[in-house]
Image (cartoon, rainbow, N blue to C red; front, side, top):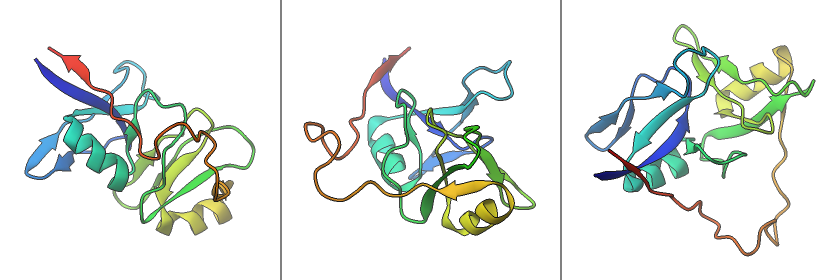
Length: 145
């Protein structure tokens, strides 16, 4: 039995790679076209993908730290929707439970100017909101058969 970690990834991601290994993303509910995309990876790959790839733990209610080259945005009307960006091969970016979407920095200007998004301000520096919790997300291992 191998322990795997379930992460949320961009919609329609063709492959999620860590080193020479590719992992296949899938819909949380294959009958619901609006459901989030998930990928199961080993814990060592999860650590890397969380910190550099913009993925986050499937059981988190909000997006974690912002990786380099990415930014947090949300709909100004509070609708909490995700977005797609990139042409001709658009990539969908899902919203978390609070409606925050992690997108490439290059997408921010267009999303804000033409699509009703706003930048989500960073948390104030200093005392973290949850001072008793570690700064890095904890990878929870889930046995898969």
